[in-house]
Structure formats: structure tokens, C-alpha cells
Length: 276
Image (cartoon, rainbow, N blue to C red; front, side, top):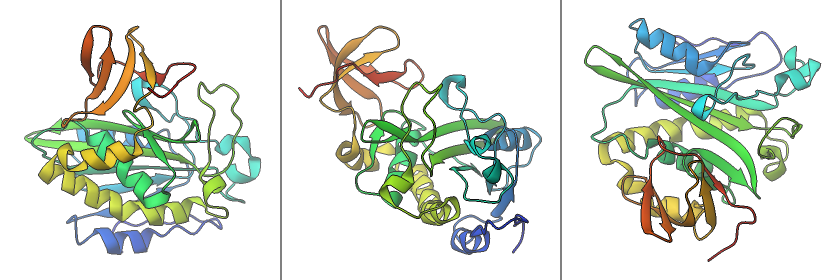
């Protein structure tokens, strides 16, 4: 299998199966698994800026400088267990980035489409917290970070995903963490990757062709914030009323309906959140 790498420990990644499923969709697609890296997103952005823009799925067993939205740190959790760090046991998180040239008519709503693909591949009880988090029972289970680089006339997209697989310590985290193993006992990082990889590629290609409007109804069914009072980081407070056709969050305020985009604010349910 061209471009695939495997780890030397007991962790058995489905790299070949993922490559076989995705390569018909993306010419030149490769899969790489590395034991440790600063950040899979950072690495693919470095490569893109150096002119390497072939489609690739980069998986890391541990990240030393993982990143989330707005520059927040993403903790891989590997350091929580010496056994995990030495690859002698199951990984506490799945961390990967998918890089590919992409040319949608409108980029708005891509993170929502990615989130929908992830939750639909994993479990019907999962919800989406606008604009890029997967939640379960008021706790964060996964995060998404999308970055792009312009290389000549090509726009290269890097879609980073981090999923908590095993329970983890909440110390130092602003949001209590959930784990996929609570919903799917016995699941591990390789099995999770096998579930999400191909559907994610298909979702991104569908988004490239049709935009977010094709995903709006599905997002509404998973919308964690809908009908709840929310407080934005700029002080705006109102009741979340779903998203529009571009993926902008609709917030009903005392001054009328406001559209919020991911570049403007961070949104968190007000405490206490309540349905309207």
C-alpha cells in the first residue's frame, strides 16, 4: 500500500483498510501513522506550505502540542498513562488530520458537515455544539479544527479531529470530558478510525459539491444549543435558533435575530441553560 506506515507496538491500525476504501475517492491518497508528533494539523500545514498537497490521512498516537480552535491546546491524554505513552495499552484518544485540495463554492459550514459525519458514524445519542464540538450528556467528546493554506491556485484544507476514547481526568479542562467508551464499551482508537475515515472523506467531497445547505436538516436533529439560552464571548446573550443555510448560528436577542459566524465568537450554553 503506497504511503502507509505502521507502528511497531501492539496497536494495530486499519491503515490498509482505510487506504483501500478511500483511494478510489481521492487519487494519490496515503495513510500515515506516527507514534508521536507536535500536531497532525501543524505537520500537514507545514507540508502544504512546502508544496506537498497530495491527499493524506495523518494519525498520531501522541501529540505534544495539539491545538484546538482559537489557539486552545488539545490534550491527547497519552501522558496520563505511562503504559499508553509506551504503546503498551489502549490509547486514550484518537487524533488525526485529513489533508486534501478542496474547492467548494462556499467554505461556510464545513466544520458542521465534518461534525455531522463524525457523530453519524459513531452513535445516535451524540450531539453537536456549534461550531465544532461533539458533545454527549453535557460533556465534550470530540473537537474539530479546520485550517487552510493557499498553494499557488490550489486551496489545501486540513481537517483535524480529536476524539476522547477512554475516560480522562477533567483537571485543567474548561468543559468536563466524555469518552466514546462510555457509549461503546470496548471500542479503541483504531476501531474508531475505521468507523469514521471513509464517511468523513465522502462527507467533505459532498460538501465541496453541494455546500452546507445539504446538511442543514441533519444538523438541526443533532443541535445541542437549539432552544437554549447561550452567551457569546462578546457578551451577546440570546436563545439559539439553529443555523442558516451557510451554517451561521442564529441567536434570538432582545434586539432581534443575530447571525453569528465561527470567526466572531465562541459560544457556550448559558448557566443554567434552559429550553425555550
